[in-house]
Length: 345
Ligand code: HEC
Ligand code: HEC
Ligand code: HEC
Image 1 (cartoon, helix red, strand yellow):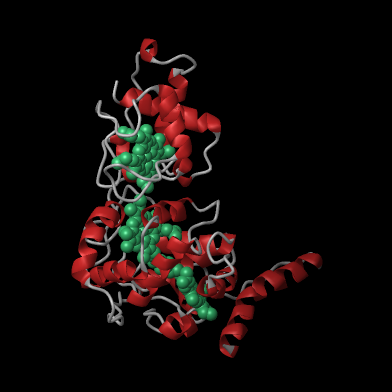
Image 2 (spheres, rainbow, N blue to C red):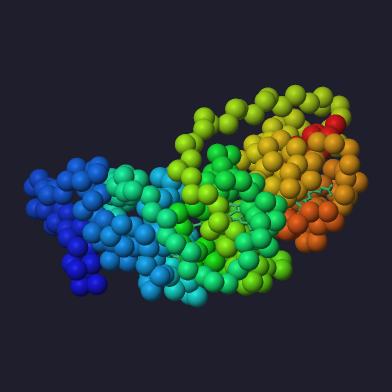
């Protein structure tokens, strides 16, 4: 730990030295390598005391493997720790341990890019299973039904849910501990944490520790494929083509357009369960047909169900949180309801 502290202050030297020099109105000397691999390697010396020399994690410190994650996910998480959106909860001992470390990385100065580049250059590690609890066969159905939408049937994440990480190359004790944190609102529950909300939804209702161990055990049996290569960005959404005369009173084409954006992006996260353009999937019903489960499909009832959510679905697992767990304003709810209204008409 002593070594760690020393290194951390040396990383901060430039910022401090700079400020002092600026007062003297002179030039500012940066003795560190330029952003890139070499800088990343230097920074990694401050990470390896906890995450291990090979980035394979250290159970005694609760620090997970970070040598097999995707660059986009690593960047997003480091920024989250820096912003205090992750690792802020008083019961999140591990997150609170990690958060100050993220602060040693100087924002906007190439530190995050450099360490992520370095982590991506490390050989991928596959920490062995350590938990002897958990029945993979029992966890398989949960995985297929409740996880594969976002983490992929092969566990490598998917393109259309931003920040949905790969679940391969992680430690089993860390997967189980994160799932308990999502369930208990210790991780992912910050009001500014859209991805955390996305992940907390499937963890709602009825997850015992045993069920968590089962799904974790199943994840550990998955084939350890190499990192997923991200596909091209999704096709742009088709322009809204709606006959204004079918719209209920007070609803405009502009609202439908705004609603399309909310529904199909992380603003509303509706598409993570109902899929793009509401075609439906394992987690949530099709909204483009004329079958309605909980309501009759009238506009005001759609507004109401989006506002209140569906605590006990009739045919689907999990649940739908009020406003999908997102900080949507009343106007945004009315807009997204307007879009849903047009989907089946
Ligand atoms: C003092 C120990 C410690 C040090 C040093 C440390 N970390 Fe961490 N880190 C942790 C712990 C503990 C967690 C797990 C937090 C949790 O359970 O939510 C973590 C989590 C992470 C995660 C999230 C992984 C995931 O799968 O979501 C990333 C990324 C990360 N650390 C990167 C780094 C980097 C980069 C450094 C060096 C700049 C670093 N850490 C230094 C303890 C540490
Ligand atoms: C609706 C999309 C969605 C579904 C369904 C989903 N996840 Fe996630 N998951 C995410 C996102 C997004 C994140 C990143 C959240 C964050 O930043 O904390 C995540 C994070 C995780 C993490 C943390 C990974 C890490 O490195 O820290 C684990 C473990 C996980 N999910 C497991 C599961 C399991 C098991 C299931 C099924 C029970 C599941 N997820 C269902 C979207 C989803
Ligand atoms: C975590 C997954 C999830 C998310 C995210 C989600 N929903 Fe749902 N939605 C559900 C489930 C589950 C149901 C109830 C299905 C059932 O009763 O079987 C539902 C039902 C609905 C219904 C009623 C359908 C019917 O036939 O009864 C509407 C309308 C709806 N959702 C709109 C939305 C909108 C708009 C958003 C985004 C703001 C959204 N949903 C986000 C899971 C989700």
